[in-house]
View (cartoon, rainbow over the protein chains, first blue to last red):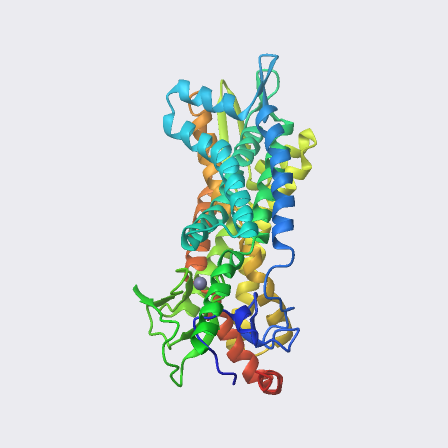
Length: 217
Length: 229
Ligand SMILES: [Zn+2]
C-alpha cells in the first residue's frame, strides 16, 4: 500500500484517484476502477466550459419561458394566454398567498438565482477569488438540490390540461413557454451536474502543498 | 443519529480505510463505523457515509413496497374533475398523455420519464442488485446496474409531480370540485416509500455490499488489481 501524506487530496497526492461511481480509491496507474470498471478521471472533464455552455442555454430558455404564455384558457369561446407571472398575480388576487409565493419563488426566483449562483461559482473557480471555500461549496449544494423543484410549473400545466377539457365551455391547453421552461430546468440541472465542486477546493490544495514543501525544508 | 466528525490526520488503525471525499477530494482515514453513526468530511462537511441499522433489509422492503404502490397507481382513477354538470375522470397515464392532444408530446414524454419510468427503473434495478447480492449470483448485470442506479436518482421528480398536483388543486378548487381517486393515494404511498428507500440507501455502504459480493465471486479480479495500489 502507498503511504499517504495526509491533509492532501487524492489529486494533489498524485498517486491515487477516486472513482466517481463507486467511491473507491484507485492507483493512478489504472484507467479503469478496480471495483466497478468505470473510467477514472480526477475532475469532471471540461467542467467549467460545459457548465457555462449549459447555463447560457438555460438563460436562452428562461426568457421565452417567462415572456410567452405557459398555457391558454378558453372560457366560453374566449381565448386568453397565461404567463407564469400572470398566474402568480391572479393567485395573489384570489388570496392564495402561500401558493402564489411558492410559484413565484419556484419558477421565477429560483431559476435565475440558480443561474447567477452557478455563473458566480464558475467565475470564482476560474479566477481563484474565493475567500470562503466552505460557503461557496454550500452555495453549490443549494443549487444542486433546488434545481429539480422548478419543474412544478410544467407539472401544473399538464394536470390542468388533463382535467379541464370541456370544449368551448372551459378548456385549458399548453403554451410554448411550457417547453421553454422544461428546457430551462433540464439545462440548469445539467449545468449543476457538470460543475465539479472539487474545483472550488483546488486552490486550497495547492496552498497546503506549498506549506508541506516549506515544512520539509 | 450521532455525528462523527473525522480527523484527516488521524492515525491509521488496522481496520480503517482510506477514502477520498467525493465532493472536495480530501484524503481521509475512515474508521470502522458503529451502527447509527455518520461520517462527515472534516473539510467540507459532506456526508461521506451513514451506517444505519439493518439498512439493507430496510432498503429492500421499502423498495418492494414502492414498486407495488407504483403498479397500483396505474390502473385506477387518478383525479376527477366536476364543474357545471361536466365531469372528467383521468388515470395517471391520461393525466400525462393529455398534453399530446396539443402536440406537446415532448413534455408528455418528459413527465412520463421523470415521474414513472425513471423511479420505476431505479427501484427495479435496486431490487435486482439486492436480490443478486443475497443469493450471491448474477455478478455481471449486478455491476452494470449498480453503476447507473445513482445517476438515475438525480432525474426522479415524482415528489415534485405531487406538489404540482396539489398546486393545480388549489388553482381550480374555487371553480370546480376535484376528487382524488384510488390511484392517487397509491401514488402518494409510492412517493413515501420511494423517499424511505432513498433516505436509507447510502452510496458508500451500497458499494461496500457490492464490493464484498465481487470479492466472493471473482476474488482474482479485485486482488490482482489491488496489488497495484
Ligand atoms: Zn469533503
